[in-house]
Every structure is written in C-alpha cells, then in structure tokens.
Length: 409
Image (cartoon, rainbow, N blue to C red; front, side):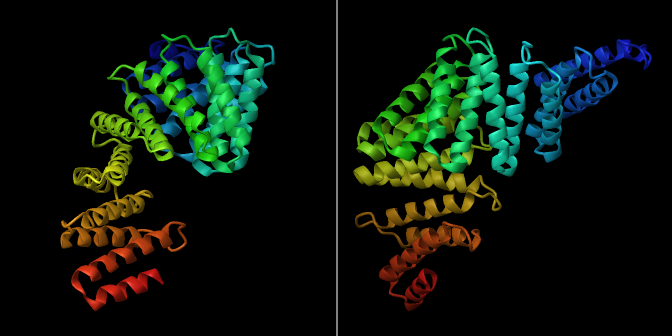
C-alpha cells in the first residue's frame, strides 16, 4: 500500500482513497499489536486523506468517521484532551455530511455520542453527557431493530444514561438505562461475543438503581444478569475478572440488605477468583483486593471468626502496598485497613498492642494524604481519634488521649 501511494501523484483522484486504505491498515495493525506508532501513522494518513477529498465526495463522511475512531483510540491510550476534541470535531463533520436516510448515519451518530461521553469522563462537563445522549438517541431512532448494530447502539445509550445518573442522581436516568440495556440484551443472540458485556452492564444498572431505591428486586435482577455474564464468558477472557468483581459486589449488597450468610460467602468466593485472575500490574488490582478485604470484614462482623479479619488485613495491606501515594483511593483504603486492625485488636483476649499501633499508623497516613476540604476527612480523623483512645485504654499514656482530643476537634 505504501508503494502504491508513493507512485500516486498528489492531484490524482485515487490518492485520498489510497491514503485512507493505508490508514485503515495501520489501525488494524494497532488493534492487533497495540503499538502507538501504528496508531500515529494511521492518524497521519487518515488526516491527509480527509484534507485531499472534497466535502461533496460520497466517501468523505466514512473517512472522517474512521479518523474520529483513531483519535478516540489515541485518547484512550494517552488521555490527551486534544485527541478526544479532534475526535468530536471530525465525527460531528461526518454526521453533518450524511443524510438521515443513509445506512451509516446511526453508527456515526453513536460514535459521536461515545466521543462526547469520553470527554465527559475526562472533564465532567454535564453538556458533554447531554450531547452524548442526544446523538445516541438519534442513532437508535434511525436504526431498525433488525439491524446487527442496534444492540450495540442501545447499549451505548444505556451507558450514557448511567453516566448522567452518576452525575445528577436522577432516577429517570437509571430507569432509562435499564430499559435500553434490557432491549440491547434481548436483541443480542446467546452466542454473540458482546452478550456477556451487555449483561454485565445491565446488572450494573440494576445495582445502581438498588443503591438509589433499596428495592430487593433490583439487587436480585443484578445478580441474575451479572451471573449470566460470568457464565457466558470463558476463563481467559480479559473482561471476566471485572464481571466477576461486579457479581461479588452484588452478592455483598444483598448480604447487607438481608444478612444471609450464603451471600457474603458467595461474594468472597467470586472476589477471591477475581484477585487470582488479575495480575499485580493491573490498574484495578488494588480496588479488587480492597473489595475482597471488605467482604472478609463483613463476614467477620457476622460470625466473629478471627481468620476473617486476618484475611481482610492481608488483602487490604496488599491493596495499599500496590497503590501509589498520589492515588485518590489510597486514603480510603488505608482507613479501611486501619479499621480492620482495630477490629482485630478488640477481638476476645487477643488484643495486641501491635494491632492498635498498626491501626493508628494506617489511619494517620490516610489523614495525611487527604486534603482539608475532602468530604471524608472528618470521618477519618474521628477513626484516628478512636485508635488513640484504644491505645490509651491499653497503655494509660496521657499523650494518647491528648492526641485523640486533638484530632477529634
């Protein structure tokens, strides 16, 4: 392709098409190998193709859409705002150049919506998620139910509604998300590669509504959908650990609602599997270890077995150790670890001074890493104060009760 392009003079009518083909080939190679240089070469070739082809040409919208996808892939990889802004500009142009009756318009509207949603995730601007919903809704209205892409576009719309729900906490958004995600699942055949992911998204939406309304039927529906997602996914699949994690969270939520031991035991079984399937370098490993620790702690609260609080401490310590100091979740995980040590220090006649000291060390670090205006800082200071009180009860040192008073004030 490169040779064909080199032999094609600039004014030749086939030059844009050959540049576009070369860009698509580089993007395919990027999808296969994950090399940034291939994606960058794809963008260079696709940009050149778009610049050379007139607006009235039938292939221009497709070339613009492909360029937008490449920019969005580069944004996902590097997190550069300029890439997602470029994606929005060129995909919007693709949509504007395409008449409503055109078969490709719904797909391009959906891509525009997901680009807006990506920028919303980066900047948190409400206008972006609203633009995403408008574009994807239009895509859904333009595409017939029988079209192979309809479930994908419905799923994208559901994700956008769920994102806005997370921002505004409006019940209508999570209800809309559930309606369209159910439709996406129903239109997707069982053997389809994307069915587990769509079931997982539906389960998460039910979990979100449960967190808002506390209706038992929602957490039960979440478990059914999340479980089905896991069952349809082979062990080696990259998405399986995340889907197991969501199932574990659903079991833990139902345990919190009903107090059934079988639920927290199911949560621990699947969360252990999640941790085992997640490599140490993975960005989500600390979160998954923290979740496992919380599940062990919940069972400890229920049964009072020392082994559970010890298992919680092992998981939570590993979560903390794998998380850099600047990470926004580190203070919360340190606070959780401190609470677990404090529970252990209060267990029967085993109250070890070393556990109280470890609790204070973790809680102190949580407080130090948290800025003053943070919503959780008062609670973490209070926990640190109770840690000092425990140490005072153990040792009778006046300095500990003074430290408790100071941090609780």
